[in-house]
Image 1 (cartoon, helix red, strand yellow):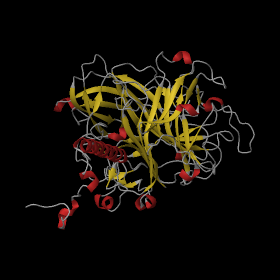
Image 2: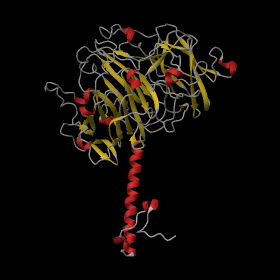
Image 3: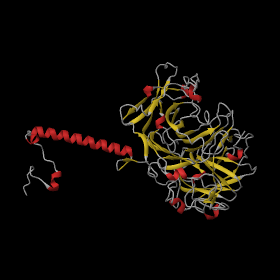
Image 4: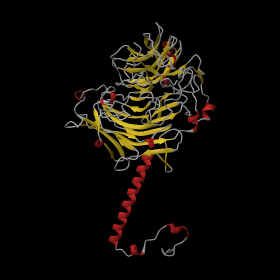
Length: 582
């Protein structure tokens, strides 16, 4: 068939004919023309692919990295040449220049944390489709005297958040003294000065090193009474430290904020959930987390959290360090999140109830570790390596009663925490109380399990090498003077693990805890907050390389356990007690 271009019809007319001008071009001109066309088309494809990958695109719609579908409220993909000044303000200074609401000077040098940096505009820039906050060692002092500069930005009031999902793709910087943070503060101090009006830390980390060192990921809430007036403070938080470095590679850090719940994620792994907080004399309502908050992204250097107070403590070659953010996205809350109320203490959540609410994650595995590999998203055991690996007690294996745990009342959670809603382990929260005059940061570490005698929880582990020693450091609280427990391996027979092929790793005797003498506030008593905590360590029997299951067996009632840190190296302190508990 001889089809002529001019007379082409039907569906074939989707093929465009060259224009008369193009048909009159020489062969060399045509080759040049089509070469340019192919280059332009190639660039369009590359750009479309880049934005699709960056946006987690689904049919042209930006969707959350994980979880249920949500409507996007606002976002910044940092793809331009300059920071969007409609959304962000660049903070400049070292805190000494701060003023109060009435305009009077209120210097806060080092931001109350003995930080070493001054935030400067030149340290905030966009590069290759990402926001960069760069920390530098200056050759000469800045005008305010600081020798270290870094970057910090805050979102403006129209870009504040009240409920929903806040998500960022972040590459954490490697280096001693670095303290990158991604957090929220209230737009208005409705309930008083910090911490009364609240703070939400989605991500904090510090002194990040390469593998085989663990990267600590801190997610926490700060609340209570005005520190500068009455002083009592509350804190609830989690620390993920699973034996791997998260520095130098991109990961997703996210908060899902509902009126009665805060969920925290690293990639698609929910490692923390909080439902307990308080404010001044208001009592245990949703305050202070019922007001709009603005977003802060800051790269501090040194201070109380990294425990680096002088430039001489920072190794040569540390600077420059780059804290890289690919995007910030804010999604709305779902109807189920807005209406959810905590069922605990109470009966465990049924699958039928869960299927009728997007609040709960469905299709839990029937067995295996709760822990996930952040690189693959697959279930994976906790790895016992040369680094310290933290096993949070609430991260017990899947499988339910008799497999992941044994509870005397497996259909009822007597605690308050809904992280494991389908299991009857009694999960409480570290809603800790820090009395006025104590160090303002408490060592909060997430949910804890209250064990009764003969109850146990199990954890899948992988020992990666032969180690000469094995130590466990446990964060605990008990008022009993003779509380004991044991850690066994490859058996769930706490009375006689050897009879079915297991072994005893260690017998544990716990030091009793103290109780603070002062209530947090007029409407909030010591019975509303978690008990005093202390850490204590023991040397265990060395495990051979390979896959194992370790089981924590309680021999006593009312034994509160927060986490177990395993390491081939002997811990330094023993015991350590929390603020207000001396």
